[in-house]
Image 1: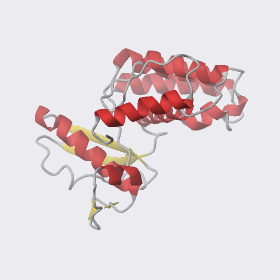
Image 2 (image 1 turned 30 degrees about the vertical axis):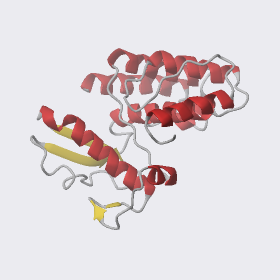
Image 3 (image 1 turned 180 degrees about the vertical axis):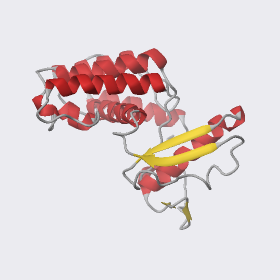
Amino acid sequence: MDYIRSEIKAGLDYVRTLIPDLPPIEFHFVDIYNRNPPWKGLPNGANLAIFEAFCAIYSRFRWPVLIQTVDRRTLKDHSYEVPSAAVDDLDLRKPSDLSLFFLCIKLKHRYIAAGEPLRLFLDQGRRAPGVAFGNLLFKNWPATYSGVYESSSVEPLLQVADFLAFCINRLTHLGMKGARTQTDMWFIDTLMAMNINSEDLSLAALPKDFTVVEFDKVHKADRKRKGLED
C-alpha cells in the first residue's frame, strides 16, 4: 500500500509541473475526464494519459472490487422494507446510506473468515476527516479493526477508489449512449483491457457499434440469470 501511495504522490507531483499556476491537490476523475479546472490547463490528451496510468496501476495488482448500489428498483426487486433505525450513523432510509450499509455487510461476509486486521477508509464526503466509522458494524471482527473518514487528498488509496467508481459509472453511461465518439470507444477499450476483478460486474461481448437495444438485452439477460425477471 505504501508503494501505491508513493506512486500516486509522484504522479501528482509530475502533473503539478505541467499546470504550476493551479496545481491540483489530488486526482479527481470526474474533473480530469471533463477537463474541469485545474485539469483544463493540461496539454492536449494528458487527461486521458492519466487514466492510462491508473489503468496500468490497477492492471498490475487487480485488487478485488466490491460494488453496491441501492435504488427504488433494488428495494422492489428484493421486497425489502427499509428499517427506520440508524446504524453507525447511517440513516437506512437514505439509499446512499443503505448502499454503504450493505457494502459493509458484503465486505464483512467476504473477509471475516480470514481473521486478519481490517483498516477501512471512507471519503470525507459524509463526515469530517478523523471521525470514526463502523465500530458497531464490525464490533465482532476477529482481529483489530480501524475505520475512519479521510480526505482523499491525504489518503491516495481513496483516489484509486474514485478512479474505479468513475470508470464503472462511465462504462454504464456509454452503454446507454446512442452515438459514441472515438474517445468513448477508446475509453471502453482501455477499461475493458484493465479487466476489473469484481464478482459484481457482468462481462458481455458486443460489436463495436452496439446499440442501446443490444445493451438492454444484455442487462435483461443478467437480471434473468439473477432471478429478478421471468
